[in-house]
Image (spheres, helix red, strand yellow):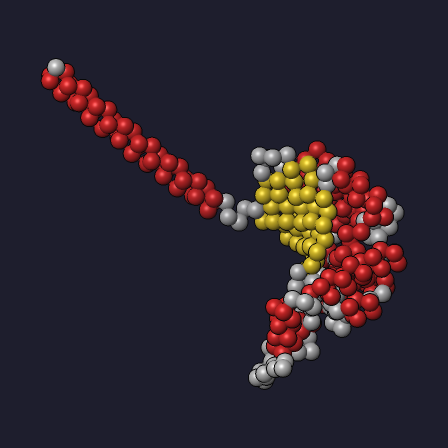
Length: 279
């Protein structure tokens, strides 16, 4: 019996050694795989940028093909479409982007939204400090239709009095709601000091007074200036053929105006110290 016990103990030790060696080799393989994946990723840097020429203009395109899921996304970034260009019409860029979320003039907001929903297509427009973004996402099988809806929206947005009034009411409510946020108010005060007499001194959403003063003609002019191919950067990716997708976008790009290149304005901060006191 003692002899059998020693034999079993020896077999157990051998088994543990074998398992340890196997685990060590497995970890080394995983480590090598990770290093290889990282190397591949580093080697691909820079390959996802190209230029697509339309009307003699080279439009920057940032892209990544990924066929894991049958979905795609396209972002149009128009530099100079942000609130930095609002001048004395505070909230104009935000309101103009919001109008793009109200459908086309032909279909209106409801019908346009219903047609998008039926095909699981989403189009959303918003602004940043310097840019206007229009985001399009879709299932791969509806890519052509999605691009068609984007085309219709950019060329014929719902620039109607009813759409303007609706967006103005919504933005006014949002602006009033922010007035109860003390952090927001403090930031406005600070911006007003640092960037006095510049668009940066005012909220991107505007004020109730400035929102109400914006006319349909103001919005139309703002969109005409912003939606310019010379200001455009395209970001796209997903389950798509990049070159074929760019060709599908070409009619839309050709229809955009091309006479307003954007130069980033420079605003310096105030050099005069100031103290704010609300007692």
